[in-house]
Length: 206
Image (cartoon, rainbow, N blue to C red; front, side, top):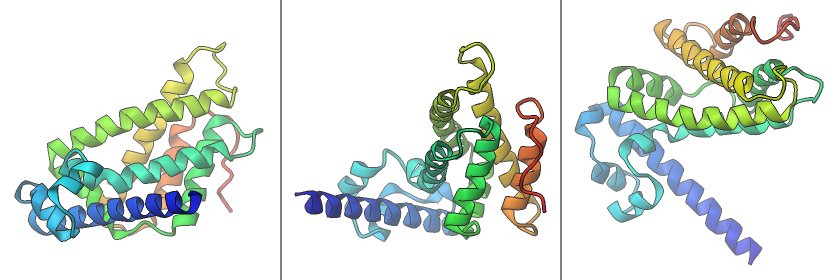
């Protein structure tokens, strides 16, 4: 039973990833406004009905990879050393997940450029980040070092600042035509954003 359930979940994950990749490829080739859900479903070798079982819209399919990366970050934050400040844990989790997944794939740059060009996609991305912001804030609050007498203010502000820093770094990276490693730009932006949250010295410099 457990093996069967595990295979079923893996198959679902593979289908979801295939739909995401098809959506990204078609949108990069033809533009968001010229790509339909039916075309994405055809490219992923599934039916329109099956598409709806996985994603509510083509925007959801396009942003799936972005959301998965951030959810991986949430899990990595939970495994960071307890003695780290919350911001150091956030920064360390970025480097952990970057190392695990390797350098940013081409789709990362494609997603960033598409979001900048298409208001509907950017709006969907911001809505997704609002949900993820709450998850991040919860993880930050669980670390117990937010320093504001147990209120939820500082974890929420820190989570929002972290996501803004990630977005700024990605936009800088694409604006620079990926001339520098994304992780290097992330380090710079996160260090700059850290000033109100963290007095520890940066740990990534050699």
